[in-house]
Image (tube, rainbow, N blue to C red; front, side, top):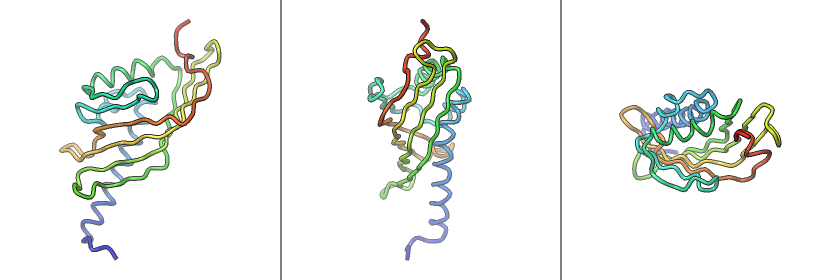
Length: 158
């Protein structure tokens, strides 16, 4: 039986739900091109490691990363980022820090693109999070690519 108080256990459940909601909000904001909502999921600065996809790991001012993401993603006719299989692990020494591991299924569609109109990325994310005055925020995000399918250049102008 857990030695944590009932209040601590309830807080952990609420935190877990808030973290999962935030990770899903990140994906949904991309698909809706809601860049203010996308920005609101992260701290400023934010550490991004998309090196497996060609963007070396670095600390970015939040607005710079949002600009990069919007520029790269708005060229597609449609996007769908599915974020399943969330596993939240809380830092044992700091209740205001956690990691959320999730799968990534990122579909991209560009109508009438030469060479194919579909591009799919499969993999996972490691989201490092911290509780802030504005709730949980992503402080660091690492993307892992498992495999790719389709035309990654579909959205590049001919």
